[in-house]
Structures are given as structure tokens and as C-alpha cells.
Length: 433
Image (tube, rainbow, N blue to C red):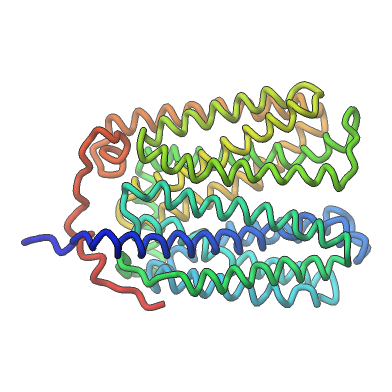
């Protein structure tokens, strides 16, 4: 029987993929601006509500923590009810909650709202990777993922910088309102641009089915290495940025808080590299680009050791570029390597990602508190060694695996195999938005 999966005309295909990447760029902006918007407001929240720094910091940790817990369940729901539907509901719900947060009468109400935002936000990052893998051709997947990751990096930057600047003009309520309105605008942009899915096939979402889908992905050694890489690299990245501000405001630098806060502009290095890394991986192979990004982070880490502001900023720029480049490539690789339910693989990757952000980032605080930046660098270097081992394992898996995810997609000189016939009918199941 002849396969029903035909290649649309080049113009239509390009237009469809352009709409997808534009929509997910807007989604990345809205999601990550919302997720990290409270970070710049913590001192103001402590002052406004008479809260300790640890209590105020729950405005950040509750959001990311609840998001991590919701990643896998929301991914399962998307397999049953549709990728675009779950992402749309998630983005709109989060934006609506954000618009109400500036009116919080107490810190407890604000924290409850931030926790609810974490739950609703999960729908976009949990589903975006699987949606891209289903809708965008393998040859263009890396570039499309790069655009999405660029949106997340710019969103993370905007979520920190916009409130910080607004605080100079008004209270935390005005700062929260400003970023919430910006996120709502990006949400409207996302919903209007997002095209219906062409490659989605509904799957059961019962507990046994979900656990079975997760077990299938966990038996893939290549995916396990990618999950470990996500945990290690984001832990490295968050550890550095968590304590960079302390170093910049203390001797020998002693920069003002406002000037030290400008360090988040280094996220622009991640934005630029994310799109380049995706395209480069499509051309020369994902494991080669991943190896290069880990080396880049190692070089950047070494430059942060001297008490020199120029080398410190340069080193953090290289670390930032390396991290976002690695995250782009690994994210795209998960979608290609996964078999069966791609959403399950994506959710496990993101669960590892946010666990690394919370657990490793917090544990690094012990090293910094006891022995300062030097001890932190040693710990981060050890994590990069682990990352190098995982990249080597991925390269070995690429050469030896016989599955579609581990074989043809990695070497641009190898002819890519056709996907199983069952996947050829995906475009017949249009998803209602």
C-alpha cells in the first residue's frame, strides 16, 4: 500500500513551519517571562510584606516547583486531548492569573497565585518539544527548536530586566503588572499564530498507558543520557547565575545592585547561539555540536576564576552561549530519538531539566557559602566532566543503535530512513484548537 504521507508544496510547507516557529517563539517569551518575573521583585516583596528573603523567594520556587510536578501529567493530557489545545489553554490561563497578581492583598495570596501559575505554565514547555517533533521535518527540526529556545532565553531575560527597570518608577505591583501585560500580549500573539496540528494522533491517557509510555522512553539509553545531560547542564548554569550577583556586589568588585543586575543581559548570548546551534547540528551532527558546547562552557568557567571583571563577564558569556546551544540541540534530539509517544520523552527531559535547576542549583549554595566562588567552580567543573561523559555515551549510542532515533538522524552523510508506516497517517488527524 502506498504511503499517504506526501510532501506538500514547498511554499505551503514553509508557510506552515514559519507559523509554528513564530507561535512557539511567542510562547517561549510569555512562559519564561512569567516564570522568572518574581526574581527581580524579591527584595521589594520582602519590604512590602515584611517577609524574610526565604519566604519571599517562594514566589520563584513555588512556580518552578509546581511546573516540574505538572510536566508529566500535562504531557499525558496533551496526548489525549491534543498538543495545540493544551498549549492554548495553558498560555491563556497563566496570562489571566498574571493579570490578577498585582492586586494580591497579602504575600500568601501572591504565593498561591504564583503556585497556580506554575501549574498552568506547564502546558507550554511540556508540549512544545513534542509538537515541534511531530509538525516539523527532521531536517528543519534543529533550527525550529533553536527559535523556540531563543524565545525562552529572551523571555527569561525580559522577565528579569523589565520588572527591575519598572521598580525604579513604582512599586512591585506596577512592576508585576508591566510584565504580566507584556506576557498577555505575547500570549495573544501565540494563540493567533499557532496552526492546527497535522501530525498529532490521539492516544489514551490512563495511568497504565502513561506509565507504559514513560517506561518505553526510559529503556532507551540514548534518551537516558539526554535526560542526565539536561539535569547536569541546567544545574551548572543555574548554579553560576544564582551566586554571580553575590560575587559582583562583594569585594573586589563591589558593584551597585542595579549595575550587577545588568548581568542578565548576557542571556542575549544564549539567544544568538540557540538558533545557530540548531542549524549547525542539522548540518554536522548533534553529538559534535553538543561536545563543542560543553567545551565552550568549560572555557568560560575557567575565565571566571580570576578577580577581573572583563574576564568574568566574558567567561559568563561563553557559559551562557554554551548552555543555550546545548539545550537547543538536546531538546531537538529528544524528539527525534523518542519512539512511540514523543510527549512522554519530552516530559521526562523537562522533568530532569527542572529537577536539575532546583536541586543542583540549591546544593551549589553549600559550596559557595563555605568556600566562595573557587569551590563553586570546582563543583561546576565536576558537573561538566559528567556532561562530557554523557556526550561521549550519546556519540557511541549514535554509532551503534539501530533505531530511527539513534541512527540516521545524526550523521548528515547517512541517508535518513523512513518512519514507520503508522506515522505516515499522522497528517490525516487534524487537531481542533
